[in-house]
Structures are given as structure tokens and as C-alpha cells.
Length: 135
Image (tube, rainbow, N blue to C red; front, side, top):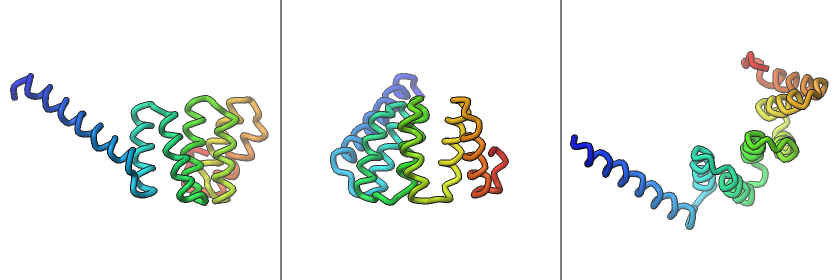
């Protein structure tokens, strides 16, 4: 393949992707669309926009624990412990057996050298996900 053609093809595909993404951003049709858009922004490192679309998802399905977990995890990635714990705790309020949420809260407390709270959350995570050896 001609190298110029390969570059043009990559550019075309990239442009098409952004066109489709922009259409979905303007007219998302479902909860899955919002989540998909949020994941795309997250994968591209645009965490703030990812949070915006996840918050819009919560407007559609306010009892969906996974949405709160995803926002909490993004805040964890941004080193915003307070918001991370707030959203992860909301995930647990909606699903008291959400092992991953307990685990991330445990990591946050461990990093803050609050070992008792870290242990409590790791213990909860391991109680609800006995198959996972990481807790």
C-alpha cells in the first residue's frame, strides 16, 4: 500500500469516528449511548467530559450503581479522593455488594495511610468477591 494512502485512510477513519461521535453527543438515544460516549472520552483522557456524560446517564437511571462507580473511579484516577469516595459510596448505597467499589475505597484509604478504613473496605470487597485474590 502506498504510504500516503495509508495516512489518508487513517485520517479518514479518524474523521469518521469524530463525526459519528459528535452526532451521538448531540443526539444520544439511550443510556448505552451516554455510557459509550463517556467511555470514549475516558479512553482519550478527557475525564471531565466522561464525567459529564456519566452524570447525564444518572439522570436517566439514577439507581444504576455502575454509573456511580465509574464516576468515582474517574475521580480516583484524577486523585480527587473526596469525590471518589462520595461517588463510590453512592454506588454501594445502590448495591451493597459492589466489591469493586469497596476495593477502590480501600485503596484510597490505604494511600491516605488510614489503614483501619482500608482494611474494612478490603474485607468487604473480599466478602463480596471471594474469587478475586487481589483484595
